[in-house]
Amino acid sequence: MALLIGYGYDRLNYRNFYKQIFFMHSLTPSYIDTYSNGLLEGRINKLYGILEKCSLCPHKCRALRLEGKKGICLSSDKVSVSSAMPHFGEETPLVGRGGSGTIFFMNCNLRCVFCQNYNISHQSKGNEVSIERLAEFMLYLQGVGCLNINLVTPTQYAPQIVSALAIAIPMGLNVPLVWNCGGYESVEVLKLLDGIVDIYMPDVKFGDSENAMRFSQASNYFENLQLVLKEMHRQVGDLEMDDNNIAMRGLLVRHLVMPGGIAKSMNILKFIAQDISPHTYVNIMDQYRPAFKAFKYPNLNRRISSEEYEMVAQNSRKVGLSRGF
Image (cartoon, rainbow, N blue to C red; front, side):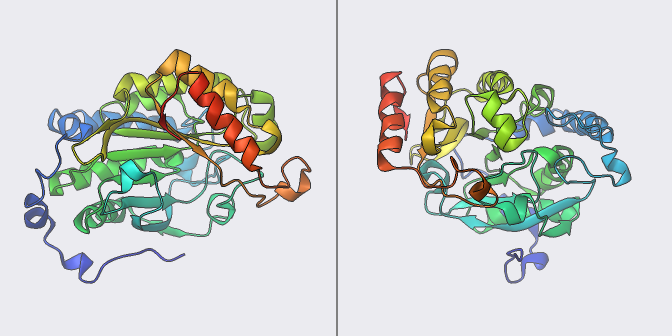
């Protein structure tokens, strides 16, 4: 998949161009203060320290990625991107009229057998880009009117992403940063992203660690997820909107309903309502379809029924959730 870039893109005078739109948003992104206070460089150094013998995610595979070795996520020290473009298919609070400035990263720290983006997440079909180029993508997406920078499966590239931010911020980057992940995160790494990420959007997959291990090779997924959601919410709180109902800061949880209750959806939703916040914005998704290796598993090899979806949506209201769906 080719990267999307605009005509005359490399010839833009970023510093003057972005000065015109610097105050467009009602809530200044967190990373502006972190950069201004001189804290970003220290975060970058700590993240690269974690990358050296990689423990950026709970797998803690200890791969020597700075030497070019690949971890469980199939990533080395090089950043690989599938596409960078305005995306209008995301949640309404992220899209507005300008779209969500989405950067799809290659590879993933989850090995889901039902992955619907397997050509990106499992087969590494993308383009290696420099950190400078990654910063240019962020600035370009803001420049064409995107309302945020939406980082899709970013976990394995956390040090490089924050390094790119350090380049883009003084050139005028000033839209919220979205961490669009699979929920299998390291709390240690999340703490290093405090004051950098504005919107956490975990795609929460399992309320049961046994099925998570079987279908995504993620051990202790649900136990770890509970700590992750608490840390995310501690940093950014409930989802905040501006006067145009555009998301500026907060936690937005996605959850894909799966056939036969495999995802143990209600374990997730009860935990969110009782231990995170009943005001959490939750997108309960109905688009599961068999993909990748799902045909090898009879209980995954079908779409969900409308009754399965409605049961999860109705039970979400019963446990006290009211935003999203």
